[in-house]
Image 1: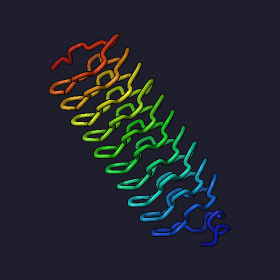
Image 2: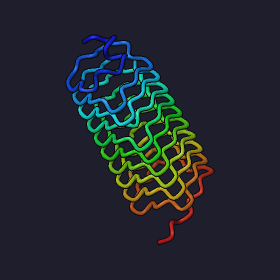
Image 3: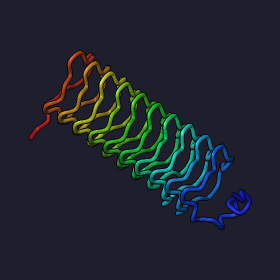
Image 4: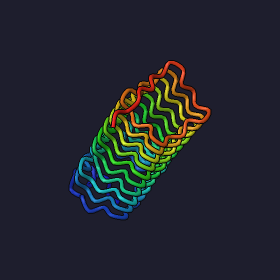
Length: 213
């Protein structure tokens, strides 16, 4: 792959390309087709991926900090990727693997994460307002200080999560599993907790105002 041509923004059809460990920092890949691409360990810090297609792509351990990643990540492998302060607003991450990824202060407002693997992710201070997290697996995730107001977490796995001072106002937690969750001083006003499992959860300082039907 000619990286100079790529950096010049002349290549957009990159489906299945092998760019493992490539230095693509600050590159403009907006609207590029990277479906099925191999980007493991690549440096995409500050890259622009607006409107790009990355469904099925592999980005294991990829560096995406501060990138504009409002793209289609359907089923992508982002395990242990660094997405710190990345812009993922409205991104399609359905079924994506984000296990143990770094998403501190990342914007995921309105993102689609249903069925995604978010086990052990660091989402401290993240913005997930209105995000679709139905059936997502967040076991052991760190959600402290994050904003999940009006997020849809129906049927999500939230076992052993750390959610201290997390904003869950008006969130849909119906049928969610919060066993062993640390919800110290979390905001749950207006949240729907119908059928939610709270066995062993820490609710000290938490407001559990009943959701009005």
